[in-house]
Length: 293
Image (cartoon, rainbow, N blue to C red; front, side, top):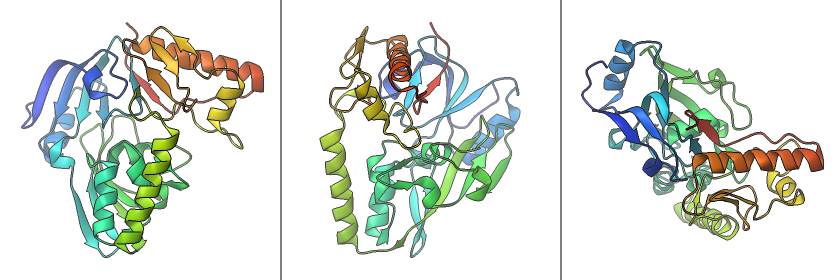
């Protein structure tokens, strides 16, 4: 491994770092001190070694055999948000949706309230075109700074990312170190009211106090994934220690001792049943990484 100024640790269990609380270890976990540390490390790293960025781990199944190569986790040095002008924020890749939306409120910037409801970080929002309540990252992103797998640092515009629903063309192994978001002028009290409305709607409809992974499947064109799952008779369906949420059927739960194989297997069974009843192929929204046990 190349020298680093941050922390590089071998065989780190990832289960404590992801929402499902299941899965194996990272062969290496790298927490860079800053963007230069990350760039220098990736430049010096054998190009055959895979690299994966990890945010809050809210939309992720880490398979039980763990993740080969290097998992990059952007910690405190990247959890920053600062105003560029009256309607624009520069956000570190490790900043949470709550931090970004709260800072926008304090600065009187509207249009970023939806980030309050996405349990992730800026890097994940940019890669996955994260969205909720009628808004997506592509609606607010101006540009992002990225360290490519080669160690090269580049700035990509919104157009460069080829955004579609929950997808971008960000290259594999690339790590988003910062992003610039633009909103519109707004009243902080009105922004807070909208954030409260979104938080209440989420609390009412989603199993927030469970070990879960957020929305499991993408909404197919013209359909709601949760309705298709419900119509296929999967509400409450269980496999091993995993269960389809009875509160919101597009959420899978770890009831306590589920393996990642239980969770992923349950998801595949749901897909099979939905295909059989509706003819529709559900696509995973949750990312699944690593090797089976």
